[in-house]
Image (cartoon, rainbow, N blue to C red; front, side, top):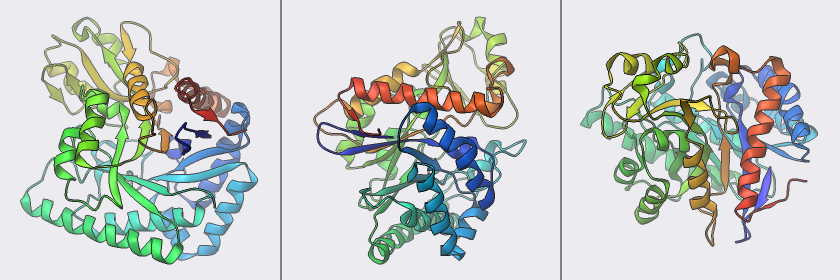
Length: 383
């Protein structure tokens, strides 16, 4: 979807396709007919954005055969779909039975991560709509926090410098601007916006900035207004925002059974207790955190549907973040990606029923996001 901010800029809203498991080019093409176009039709819009996830093998296939990029672009256009952003955080295997910390491999000390990210940027340059101002690619915030030392930090700085050079060369050769957004996440080398302002201060901000994942912001109990003010002071652009909600509970000690329903074996669900205390997964938190104050859990909840009490969603944090990003005289970003990749690992009574259920859920999330942006004064120009 596209909305127009009062400052005249176009704000692109997409849903992230990492919710779908395809890791081949044919599988990605099949997603467009199976999910992308039906979600667009359910929303009643002429054009819908997808935040594509291209696993390593898919990106390789597209880079090695530019004809396939043209094929993908034509298929997108034929179904009323467009792409201005890619999610290049997961490398491959994002729907394996157990993912957990594998999602942080390879990290930014490696040439593999650099090559994959530049390949994704190259593909995106070929997919961007002619009238899109720029593209964005989101990626992990350097690495998981352990192991990490000065030598690894130095290697990561070298890789990110090479990334900036590669993006500059891509712009010169393609005529399209693609920026990369590093995404702070609980448990990683860079967990918070405050840490991002320190760690990424020396980066080339013409090409590199931050992906503001609102679920992650909420899990760390960060204030959206303060976080965005810190980014502006540091000169770090919000290249992309991921509209997402975390799981919240005010009194975890009395809600352990309800919380336990959200523990599952595929993804990592980092948990933080307000005022201090952290665990890398929900089962560890249930066994080890004191539960004397509120918890927030890294579990991406559907934006439009709060869980039953005593559990809650951090949708209020998302509302505040959207207001801070778009409620002023100028938009602080132009790419918004709804990223609820956890639909199929929700507690069984909350999972969507078949393709139709998932399509309806994705459409409802996008409608929720659109309605809040319109309430902030943006104009829906998708129809």
